[in-house]
Image (cartoon, rainbow, N blue to C red; front, side):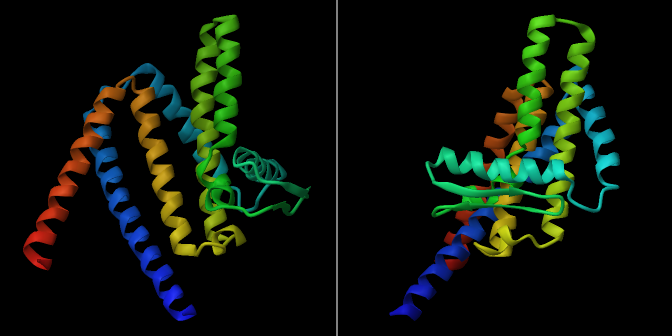
Length: 226
């Protein structure tokens, strides 16, 4: 009975991985088409400059800073509270941190890798400042800061994956990476669509891409399998 249950779990997990790779293909194709068809705005340029500067700076970091560890554990905690889980034993040290979560699900476990906490905080706080003060340099800092903080999320996520973090082992390394890639590429797609001020085009390209993939899958099933 246990072997049958394990086989079913393996089958379900394999189907989920296939589905995520299929979705990632569609997202990647849509992202490439979106990047080549957009008329880039001033806002998008500022975000891009901030991202490139951040990427250059943070790619030189080879260890986790206390700032990252704090954000990492805080993101776990916030996601746990969102799912109404009990938490205890929050520790943040120079070389690592920990948090005990009662019955963590996959979103709680992978939260730091899929949720750009500092980018969201920056966007909210700088956005409120810009609304209150309404200065040109405030807008520049707002959008450049979004790119800069997102570069921090990207580089630290890549570093965490390369260090084989224990979070990734709980649901399987490859399975976890598939989820992380899917959500991050989707976030990037939405970000480019939003900051280029052409969200409608992005949604249309995404819809066309998945329609195309569905036709390929339908033809494969009808002509090869059946």
